[in-house]
Image 1 (cartoon, rainbow, N blue to C red):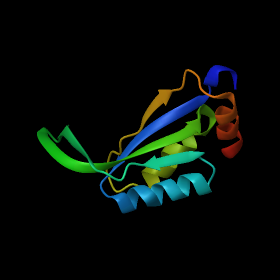
Image 2 (cartoon, rainbow, N blue to C red):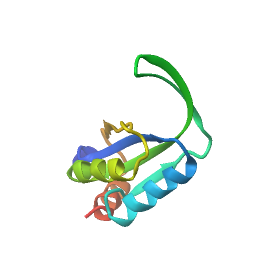
Image 3 (cartoon, helix red, strand yellow):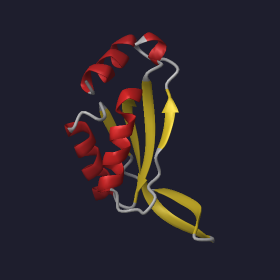
Length: 109
């Protein structure tokens, strides 16, 4: 994987730690993600929903995958997620450890 150009980090927030762990387990089991970090301390999210400003404690998932697995990963998150519109933000990886990027790619193959 030259310079990690195919590696992606996906951010997803969940309403509970249990929901985050359930999604993480499924993504790794189905080889859609090599690793999912479940941030156990809630983050406070302030957002607009249905024309009102809302605030909620959410749990952040940091998902490591490849561009080839993104579409299936997004479908699985949507299937398991309790939100009408779950957060699904993809960040490109500019580079990283050759061994880690090789492991990431092999883990989702």
